[in-house]
Length: 107
Image 1 (spheres, rainbow, N blue to C red):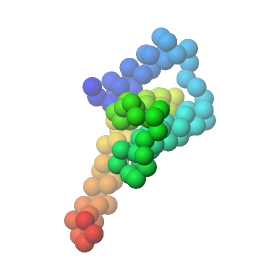
Image 2: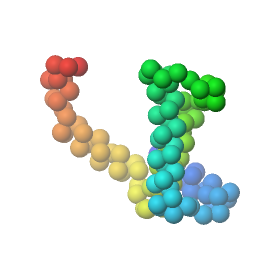
Image 3: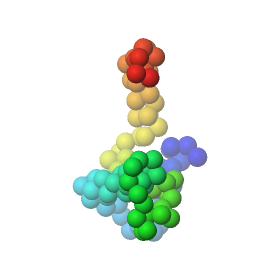
């Protein structure tokens, strides 16, 4: 699935099942909440925190997909073409960081 297809699929889902998009501010709050849930799993799986019983069956991929879902919703409702935005962002990073990481003695 391409990013464009994902944006269309989310838009179709919203039209079919979701009634309408939540406001941009609500979606920003939801995105923050979803990133927090992802961070919770990462900190327990890869960090020093221990799992709570309620977190033991959480799926990392599902949590990442929740973040992606809300990000796509925000892109759709604000008119952002994520394919083009991502291409432009990759070009920026490639130009800016073409030697930066290779020359970093910490890596």
